[in-house]
Length: 206
Length: 206
DNA sequence: GCATATACGCTACGACTCGTAGCGAAAGAG
DNA sequence: CTCTTTCGCTACGAGTCGTAGCGTATATGC
Image 1 (spheres, protein in one colour):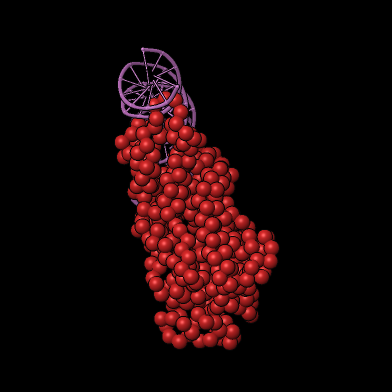
Image 2 (image 1 turned 90 degrees about the vertical axis):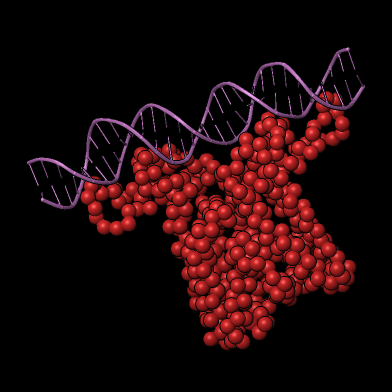
């Protein structure tokens, strides 16, 4: 994207332009959607020339990915003292993130592109999926030290449990927000957490 | 899409063309993605003129929705005599369908575009999502007549239960297959079904 | 101070796509 | 046979992506 390193020779790039362009991209994405977003429009919103966009990102796709990736590093695992509170907190965070139209469009576009591009797929898994799995691992560990969950019998069952929990939580929330189109209300989060808590202990025993 | 009914006056449409066009659409979608798919290319693959496409579907969006919807109509709800067996069967069916790269790319491309286009989103919900919910409804009804599940207290709680079950099952399977990229082994299906069965009875009571 | 090298804004352009229109020909219905 | 619709083909207008060329602005290295 930006040149690899250090100050080189000619006129340096406008440092503010990157942020303005990415912000303009997110704004246009929210207003017009992916299909309605045009490079000329983004350039106008950011107050730069279209050629400046292409000087920094090689294509429209790359620009949009960069614009949303900047927003995606917000998720954190809270330790609220109980498993139920932790789950509800992370579900609420995730749902809030997915309620932004620009995040929806960019995430799905990213996944769609990733099905045909193994390199991009690997990048998505490393920079988005794996970090989120660590949230599940952290939450489970905290619950185990509190005695809310039994310790894992072995490494293998623990890994399987993390996988299935992660897919269930993330998949269900994503499906509700993006496919069914229903918002994640506090009532729904509570109901879903209840549904999830019941079998959690059995899962660890395997 | 196709004319509402019966044989009319002029030259009848080529009956084979519909299937050939839809198959060509899925093929192109898997190879090129949404952005790469063009009407001219689909027409060439199907061996028809571009105008024939527009004579049968009003736009590119509608064509792709029809192509994907046709493939998802294969899903059926088996009545194997127990709720657990029924769930495992439908999950296995769904997972098998999603293991084909062609279906993966097609579904994700469609969902991605749907987030950007509210009209397309509505079409997806009507012609793909709602029909699939019938599987959940049928499975629940069968389990209720067998006495495995209590009858619904009222229409409203039944609808809410169907929604949350559908989001959980479809979302989890989709997430595992498309995002995590792990295959749905028999062990995984069994474990997921166990996770699902525990709270099902409570859900109906609401 | 001066040459060098890059970034910037602007305009124009080629290539491509969507979706439409018009044409002659084909193929069934009545 | 007549009428109606579909078919393939070609051409077109509008719009977009991404690039090229120009003159200008702003930094570094000597």
